[in-house]
Structure formats: C-alpha cells, structure tokens
Amino acid sequence: MKRNVIEMGGKTYVVSLPAPWIKKYGIKKGDELEVIEEGEKIVVSSGRGPVAKNVKIDVSGLDSALIYRLIHAAYIRGADEIKAVFSNKKESELAHKALATLIGYVIIDEGKDYIKAKDVHGPATEFDPILKRVFFTLNNLILDNIQALKEGKLNISFIKEKDYEIGESINFCLRYLNKRGYSDHRRNMMIYSTLRNIENLGDEYCHLFEVISKNKIEKKLLEILGDLGKMFKEYSELFYTYDKDKAIALVSYKKKIKANTLLFSKKISKSEIIGPLWAIATRTFDLIEPKLEEAY
Image (cartoon, rainbow, N blue to C red):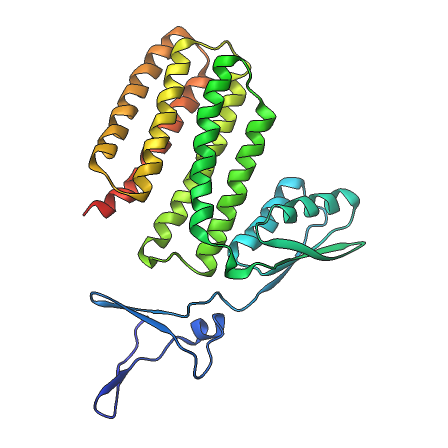
C-alpha cells in the first residue's frame, strides 16, 4: 500500500497508518510506536501482539484428524481463547487432547457440550528457546534412534511421542510469527516456511524408522542414516550462523547419500525404504536454500 507524505509546520513529515493495522494491534492516541530505520525502509512496530481474539469451533461430526487440525489452525493463526463445541464423548476427548498440546494454553471452563481454553502466558514465552528446542529434539530423535537401531532397541511409540513434541513446539513458533513476527521482520517468511519443512522432515523420519523396524537392518543402511543425521546437524548449525564450509559439507553429504542409496537399492527391492531415504536427504538439503540468501 502507498501513503502520501504530509508536511506539518515546515519541519515534520507525517505518514498515516493503515486503519486495519491500528485496529488489529489496538493502537490508541498517545501510544508510543517503535520506529526503526533500515536503509531505504522505515519499520514501524507496535511492540505488542494483536488485540485478543476469541474463536468458537464446532467439531460435531468431525473425525479425529480434522478436530486436531481445526484447533491447531486456530492456535497458529493467533487465537487467544478457543471454545470447542462437541456432540459426544469421543469428540470431547479429542478436543481435550488437542487443546492440551497448545503451549501457553490452559483449560478455563467446560460443560457437557463444550470446552474452553485460553492463552494465559501471552507474549511471556519467548520464541528463540522454543525454536532451539525444535532443532535439539529432532537432532536427538535422529541420532538416538540410529543408535537404538544398532542395539536392536528401536521404540516406535517413543519416536512418535518425540515427533509430536516437535509438532507442538513448531505450532507455538508459527503462532508467534503470526501474532508478533520475528525480531528481524525480513526473515519472518523464511523462518515460517523453514519450520513447516522441518515439521514434514520429522514426520518423514518417524515414518522411515517405522518401516525400517519391520525389516532386516543392513550395515549400508546404518551408514546412510548416520550421514543423514550428520547432515541435519550441520544444517542446524548453519541455520544460526552461515558458514561456507558447512554449506559445502551439506553438498558432499547429499552426494554421498545419493551414491550409497543407489548401491543399497541394488541389494534390496524395498522401495518403502529407498524412497524415504532419498526424500529426507533432498528435503534436508533444500532447507539451506533460504539461508544462502543471507550469505551476501
């Protein structure tokens, strides 16, 4: 959008602020706004989240997947209070479980056909520690379960639990970005899309380990998994600080994994293992593309 510059008193230049933005963040006369100069751009920040938003969701007649997705979607979009309405015991249990996974939320009211939960932490919970938890948990999920495979102690239920924890943390991060935005607004969309891709990557690892658990463990497979784990660890470090050598290392890992996957595919005919291995390598490598834009 464009705004005309207004001259006041011959010394001050004024630009009007969009009414929808004023309403969204509850800006009133006399409020202070933060103004940041970034080259040719001026960034105006309210320093607060949007005005509280309450949402009512009717989950009656919906299956479990849709109930979870609707509640999580409202949370990610920034709802400060969610009221879920249901028609039977199963829907009630699902709504309770979905609301219980929302970081910062607590159940404040419930009746025979509804449950209500509210964000009681507000902006108090910080973004960066939760984001670091995402990387830490996925790194551990990969490396710990490679070791568990070697020892014949793979626990699929535990893997799914950790994958779910990653999803909870990512939902919080996405919510934060929608409500408040990242500290460097220029990285907002990059981080948002990165988190979505990491969420999918976690799901793919969860699926891969489940498939592997039903098959004989080959030495070459463990080697490929080890390189995949190292690849994501390198990316985790690259995410916070761009490093040319780490970027080159990621390329090397991808090439090595591709070569080993081709060799492995000649020994076995199980596409349900080969496909996910290469998909994970490709998705992990694709994560670095947005980061490369910061190299200049």
